[in-house]
Image (tube, rainbow, N blue to C red):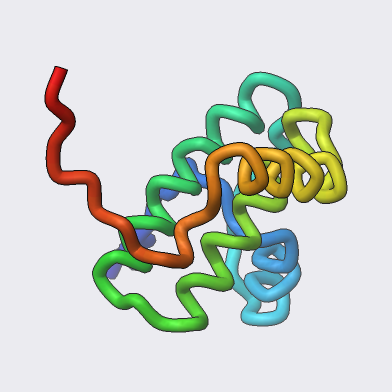
Length: 109
């Protein structure tokens, strides 16, 4: 009698503690640490994945996941959260934010 081994292939960025959690569950896994261009590409994919999940289930938990990935993107691009906050404020002062919910329907030229 042979035992079938089922492998699930992911090839995606996961949270830092996932290998530890898998080890605690006595699961075999293979992973590697992404850096440089690979990390930035995987983060871009993760942003899209998390936004898609949030769009399907717009709740605080999913929004927190989007925010977590965006924070990682900021770091991977060599910025700090302070850099982003300063630029965000600068743009808000110049063009406003999104608090009023203005929908631009058309512009005549």
